[in-house]
Amino acid sequence: MSNICVIGTGYVGLVTGTCFADLGNNVRCLDIDPERINKLNQNIMPIYEPGLEQLVSQNVKAGRLTFTMDYQEALKDAVIAFIAVGTPSGMEGEADLKYVRSVAESIADIVDQPIIIVNKSTVPVGTGDWVADVVTKRRAGKPLDFCVVSNPEFLREGSAINDFMMPDRVVLGSVDRSAAERVSQLYATLRCPILITDLRTAEMIKYASNAFLATKISFINEMSNICEELGADVTQVARGMGLDKRIGSEFLDAGLGWGGSCFPKDVKALAHMAVLHGTHPQLLQAVMDINRNQRRRVVLRLRKELGSLNDKVIGVLGLSFKPNTDDIRESPALDVIHLLQNEGAQVKAYDPQSMELVANSEKQLKLCENPYLVAEGADALILATMWNEFKQLDFEKIKASMKQPVIVDGRNLWDPDALSKMGFTYYGVGRGVKVNGE
Ligand SMILES: NC(=O)c1ccc[n+]([C@@H]2O[C@H](COP(=O)([O-])OP(=O)(O)OC[C@H]3O[C@@H](n4cnc5c(N)ncnc54)[C@H](O)[C@@H]3O)[C@@H](O)[C@H]2O)c1
Image (cartoon, rainbow, N blue to C red; front, top):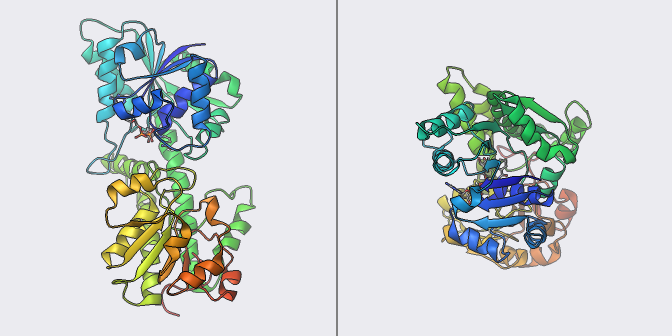
């Protein structure tokens, strides 16, 4: 059992803190957002993540998990402090470290006991050394017994608790191996491979992993564009490829491309680091270009089918960047919606979890209470996010209410033959029907 402080109580911090509490540790979760902490203290989750509410409630009741805005209280007696604040993209694509700096300075100002500072935020290579420098300079004249460990997080929103409790691996990097080993004890009962490296290598593993997964998706999307021109079906191509153990089937689904709070900013930040250090990240640039283009292809498809999109009514199913989360950061659905709105289309949409968030930022978007209201009077219906509840829709009802029965299945979810037989004009992604030409 350890006294742990988790700083930043967002998707990563809240899941990390709750899971460590569930493993028997005393965890204090800290955030500077009063609304977030007030909600958590009333057992209201500030984010949607399956299973989280129950796990938080159990551990709060057991007295192992608390939420606070008070740094003094949060860091009192802590032997390990996790930094889990955001690292958004800066102006040039670099990771903006202002929140990490602020946390490092607060730790330096408040802590007197020996402490291990663990970076869980995704940070540029070299940040661990920089954090150590920030703390040391801030403490000038009054040295602190501390060490920095990098512990990149690999959880996925939507399956975050499972990912945390059953990780493929835990990566720990430090200049001080004993500090990394101390942190590794927190994970010992999870019985997964634990890789201990130096600081920079651990930081790089996170970026390389995300860049590789984004590359895999962009690869299959490029294949899907070629499939469309050549009359092949990319879903079968992906299956045929994915059964090869060297390739694997995950992250091999053609669609509208990747989004979310991690891949876009992390690929950009890695490319930025590469350029800054004199290398040419050509592959990463292509991966980002292909991803942007997947959104544009939907608009091209609709233009070809419907002519001008001005004043056309387009329905969109799904707004979160992927299913089982309410996170709309860099959502492909929203990118497509903005492109359609730029062409003068009236867009309406539905999402099971993220409508409250979207309502705040998307004033021109008409939000509907269910998929059927989205389809009503629409000239086309786009599937943007593959939520389970979109798998078995009443397509007779949908067809009867649409102005034109045109479907763009942006996630290759539905059966093209069945929908075509029902009288829909069906387009998937990379399923043999050309965007350009006939
Ligand atoms: N979301 C993911 O799926 C995921 C997965 C792996 C890694 N990561 C990385 O983890 C980090 C956090 O991501 P997230 O999605 O949890 O972010 P988030 O935006 O959901 O949460 C960050 C939280 O930090 C708080 N914060 C900011 N400054 C603070 C300060 N000085 N003191 C205390 N709290 C402060 C914010 O109020 C916010 O609640 C990022 O670097 C991200 O790249 C995210």
